Image (cartoon, rainbow, N blue to C red; front, side, top):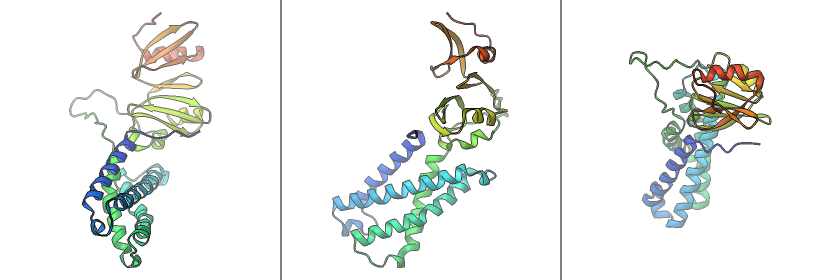
Length: 256
């Protein structure tokens, strides 16, 4: 089972893609205003923008999750992904030129197509994958502890941020909830918890893990205990992990 990752990053990309299609259809750059009527011009730019956008998302997502590039900052990885994705993107533009504008000199302009796709795709991808979560500066007197960049955090899409609220096992996947939404990661729950070693938090159930600072109180509902999280969700607490759950809650008392 795969989760449809319509996260904030995807929504940002969809907004930009839709805006680009509208602007390009109305203005008709690169001669499309003269060569194509409005309906065909809309189809041309929808296919061009949508196809290149999907290619950018796939290639950049692979590079951001590549362990052999963990030493690279996000910016050069996004730039490299934009340039690589621009090669098939340029081929797509060439195909559109042949089929919709009857331009047979595709290979003569291939490098120009590549440059345009990379130049437009990079800022769009940067806006999609960039993290807008403010960091607490020690010089400013911030008291929030710095979260270690554990191995598991490298698995998260960049648009999900790094502020984890909880992990929950679902079949062979783990649902990771952050302050920006949730995403499904293909990994065993036990492996995910192991990779989070060093990240403040604790397991509260055989299928649930909660980050430190995200637990409000422990509730008694019928014959079971629940832990209420900062985002309002409630997760079950099992007896073997009750002591750890109480530590997460801190000074809060149980509520009946």
